[in-house]
Image 1 (cartoon, one colour):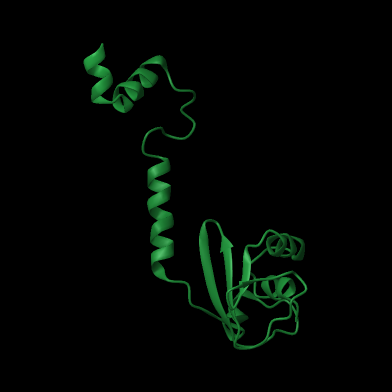
Image 2: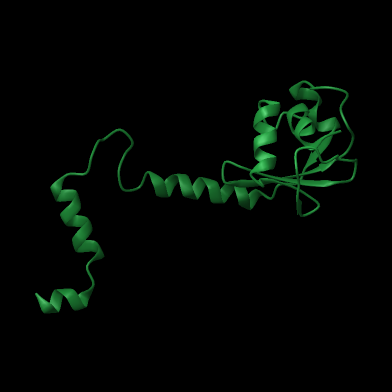
Amino acid sequence: MRIDKYLWCVRYLKTRNIATQACKKGLVRINGDIVKPSRDVYPGDVVTLRKDQINHQMEVLDLPPSRVGAKLVDLYRKDTTPKEAFETNEILQYAKTYYRKKGVGRPTKKDRRDLDDFTESPEEENEA
């Protein structure tokens, strides 16, 4: 079975077209090698997919006959993604929302001055 079809069948990606594009961009690896969308996948292969800044790893257990329901996905793949990958993603989400809340708008002059004061080095302060 082709890797793009496999990723679609086991519900990692929403459409075959998205799976094909992911392969073309180099986001999919089989046993450590970047692959084309037409590359065949076999039971025992380790597939790595970079999605949402997380490297999802899975081991192919069997090949599905067609797209399967969400409850049956575990019959065809074993998810071996380390938990640290998900924890790192949560930390990134906190870092993004730390300074400004979403939807607050453009930074004000006061925000810019505060940022300039924060990033200014001590050598620049002595010169002033």
